[in-house]
Length: 79
Image (tube, rainbow, N blue to C red; front, side):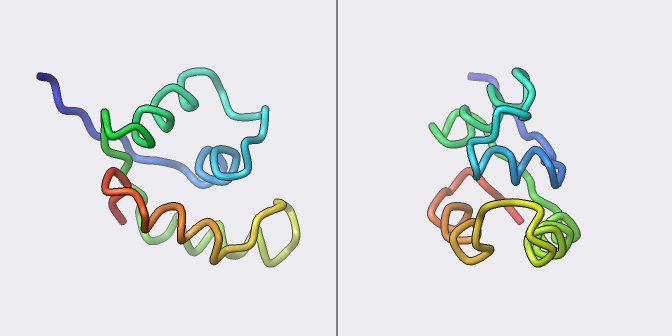
């Protein structure tokens, strides 16, 4: 079994959580694998801060608490 970890950037995280078509194929594949428990997505705290800033400026259609709940429910997202 190969175990892998990937560091997530702000826009990839937001696009994944909002199911935005801007998310690239490879990033979608990695984040979908994290959702299924097949890999781990590492989310640096600064990424969450930047995501909050973007969401406060209404540049994405997602409530920050909803996004955090999705991350918290998964064992494969590490902050």
